[in-house]
Length: 118
Image (cartoon, rainbow, N blue to C red; front, side, top):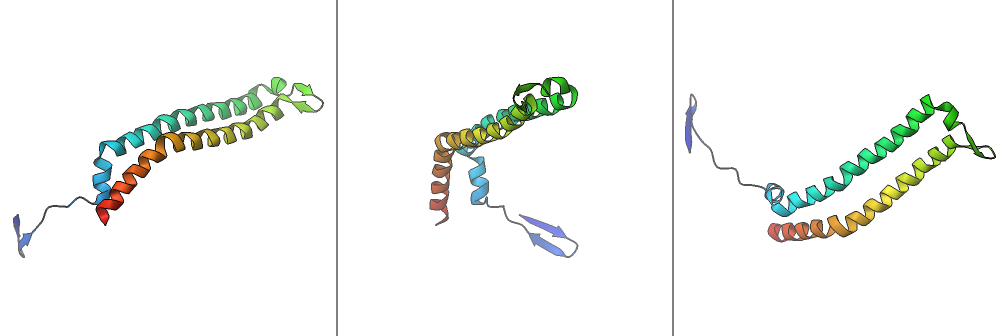
């Protein structure tokens, strides 16, 4: 293709897709993104809801959160500790999910891409 400008003709050439663009267009890569999003988005929403419940109860349900469960331990302290527990459980669950559903497909895609670049 040749385009003429005031300074003279300019030749352009078609853009060759990079390996990254090729991978992004593949069905397996789209499946990998779908699997990732189908786990991460709902889990993020659930965790945020759980966290916001803790914040809302702490702000507007002080009597409930101040209820003693045993000794000096109240509901608010238990909810606060459960925030840490849920964070670790989500990290553990994601690790298992990634090991079983994401990593095998990502490894497949990566090995194929490495074969194309050599």
